[in-house]
Image (cartoon, helix red, strand yellow):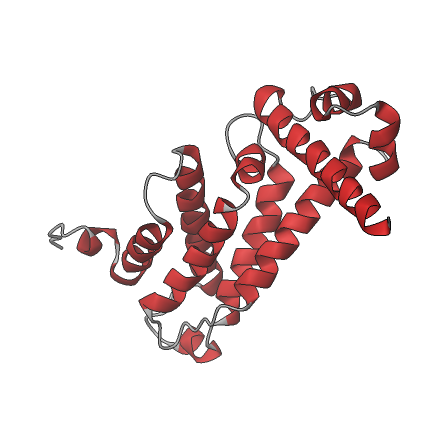
Length: 201
């Protein structure tokens, strides 16, 4: 009996979240009401309040759970900037894209168009930045040709997130492996060389 109850609770929570994601895409977070969510999930308002205190609580729960899953997946990826191997960055990108593929509705709602949730993007960027920073060798900072570590991390994270958002927004036009491979080559060789464009100084 307990297992049946647990399953019913899980299904209700999933219905609430899916309704929430769909409504964010359709009308934006601010315009959504609890009644909207309840109607879409086919539950009553009292049932909603059994699971969440209010709309911000629902948003925080959704963000925390998905970002926790993302972080746990990314943490397992080996990464080193010295020496840098394209395969390491490729693995991180592919891990992120595969996670997004399993939760596309959520990520679309959080990251795309005017309805995006800015705090979600900031938290996701911090996960990526922490991972890239993890592989940084302090000795690189002493190189006379080195650029600012902070500048490099901002560039890499912005590029990373730009690719992710492009991929989601355009309905995943390339396989995860191909996107990851191309991105790692752009970072390693620069966009001109990676694209086969001749550069003159």
